[in-house]
Image (cartoon, rainbow, N blue to C red):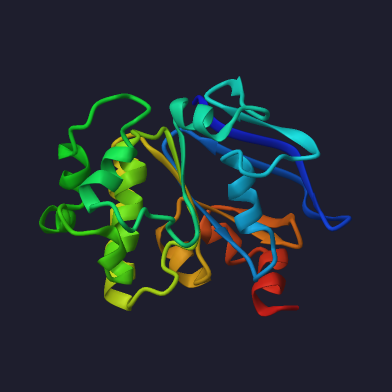
Length: 232
């Protein structure tokens, strides 16, 4: 199986301490992989480093066999690594359609049919300013904009943050659909139980390090993960 994304010995320094400490991570093909951990564990820093928003001090990032460690964020998008950031970062004055079309810039095809096939809820919102959307609608729009870039690897930070249970469930139901089309998804989720219920594999982070990793069933009996989850 071809490795989709590989992270080797990644280290990111913040205020003279390691926010990410020699981290190793791998995604094999089309997988749904969760990142869990307490606040400050390094989850958001890791995604921002993978997408090129933060430069690491050590280590490498390989996408589809190519080293992208020093590529600019827009070059990573062109190569298939797309990030839905925490806070969504929509252009509020632009319409939903215009926000989605911005996701198409890397391949020049503005046909949104595929995105609307995944997220039909956006069809009735296309002419609405993104700044007027509800929290749930804004998250759908942010995910849709990323999908418009046709990612090989989709990164989603804090996927259910601020969402009502029904809206969160809608997004979580979408993730296996994306993977079934050949996409790899790496997502951050605070709700460990929900993450384990949908992910193929899980990485548990604490203080910038992986403390446990593996399929959900294995992690549930992994002492390091149980200690981590219980705060022990």
